[in-house]
Amino acid sequence: MPVTAYDLTGRTAFVTGAASGIGRASALLLAEAGATVHCADLDPEGLHETATLIKDGGGTAHTHLLDVTDRCGVRRAVTSCARLDILAAIAGIMHSSPVLQTRDEDLDRVMAVNFKGVLYACQEAARLMIARGVRGSIVTMTSGAVDTGGPGLLCYGAAKAAVVQLTKTLATEVGRHGIRVNAVAPGWIRTPMTDRRDGEAQARTEAVMARMSPLGRVGDPEDIAHAVLHLASDASSFTTGQIIRPNGGVAMPW
Image 1 (tube, rainbow, N blue to C red):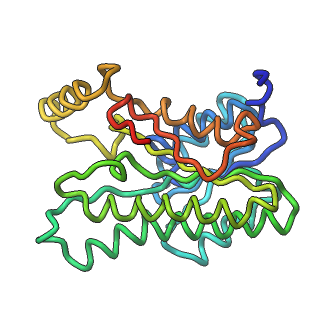
Image 2 (cartoon, helix red, strand yellow):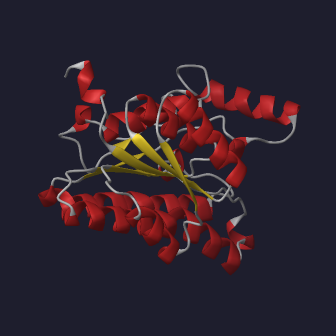
Image 3 (cartoon, rainbow, N blue to C red):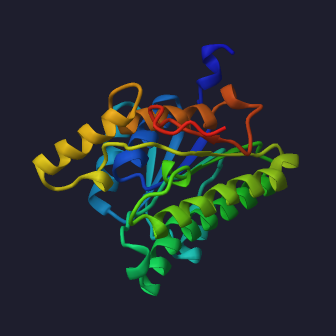
């Protein structure tokens, strides 16, 4: 596959969670590949910073202050795009609580953001692509948590597992329209979501996670952004319904 398969010139991408971390890195890389990027997030300052970085790099960016749990808001934002070729549904939150201490409100909030927010974006993007005859690419963000058990990760892992099922099911339903749907399941990535707010605690955590990886390191947002770019581009034109795992080898499922 030639390098030009990664050229997104003339295409439009909609990225949720674009204000920081993996979302920002993905928005920047998609823009660098030539896409016009619609950046969506709840954080207005981070959103502005991401758009500014894209524009300073010579790219084109639009911003949407968006709560992904608001179905109507997601519909307005997505359908405002004059064209839509790529959706990267990355917005998410972290929550940790033991199973026996998990409250209804904990589960409801995490499912609302990490699953329903992805569902809403996928629904609106797929409808728009079908209506306009676009053979697009939808990329969802799940997690390495779906491959392992971990204390405190019931809500987070359950929501991310639901995203896996959404990805596979939607891929079977929209493939006839030429739309591909794939997920990225990152390992431990150095982002604001994994920031322990304590230098020593952060260093200890990263050291533990690095030892679990055959590569001997933790990941950076850019590691995941390259997986997003691959799935968004023609380089993955025969890939759909798949879970890509850039996790440093921490988990190696069949």
